[in-house]
Length: 249
Image 1: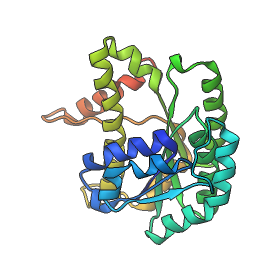
Image 2: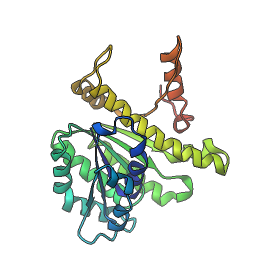
Image 3: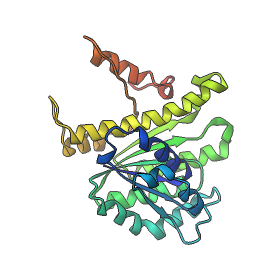
């Protein structure tokens, strides 16, 4: 599995979760951004041997303009694809924050390149908080529509649900960390499905079939023990703060 962080938010999430992964040796990491300075601050990814790639020529960022991010991604799509294929990756988890310039503009371009190369792609993309304003949300919604057309499955992570669930400033910090944990658990879950034998085995073709049939989706992880552990774990996954007011039936 490859994990591709796109833009400031996507790269930061991947940088934070890399040390939470249980099967980190099974995962290849690539981080791409138009901001060269921000890339150099991804210390955890550098320690894990992740590949950092600048999108575009100037390294000055996209200025919250999605068209700038898209153009930079078009210029660098070949290098990003080479980094993914050189790692021998069959499936990519693309992580991006939508609403800004690089994540919104570059993620759909890069996912389209992966799609054209036959690489299965699951996108985990965050939507802005309400306090970030309507303009940023509109950019995010447009980017989500474009991204959904070029990935096997898209999971939109609504940041505002974290605010609603937190209630206090202290709990808000915990809620943000819960997003990182959810992303880490999702990557771990896919890695274990593909790499570890179990009572009921799933291979890469099985996972890809599910993704391609799924379209949009939600991501939830739960753990439990005891006689009803399967039911309890599923219920805990569905009770995650991100989906508290979302119909997942």
